[in-house]
Length: 193
Image (cartoon, rainbow, N blue to C red; front, side, top):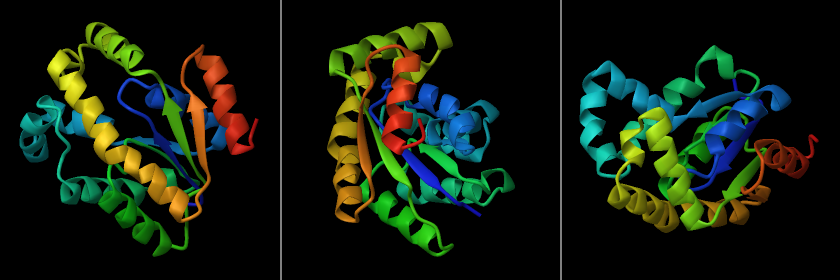
């Protein structure tokens, strides 16, 4: 079961996924990305993929019940036994409460919350660049990008206050700079540099 959980917060394009891949080795924890899981279901064209395709393409969030179940199944897999870096989850207060209950039921908690801060205009530029490089349709449309950023600001940022209120260490990180510099900032904040 989970021995440590680190939550990675930040708006789309803030570099959470890039940092999570680098932090896996340092923290000996498995990167779990809800965005990657959703894209995998979309590419398989399975029932869940068809259900969420319209939601994702419009920049909206997948319903909590669907997301929670997908995360629960993933966190019960053997490869997360030493810990996990959760990227893209929770996205709102109900998901944060669900995760607290899920972890507490197994005798585990959250080691820390890393919040990647990047100015909005840089985020938009990064997302457009990513759409070209990676063919990510969810990053190609200005309206969708702005809705995703607005949704993060309206719903997900509230989770940061929730974790502060339950006394989980929250670490704001300057997400501008080289990938190496940002990794060092995160490791220092988590006390593992």
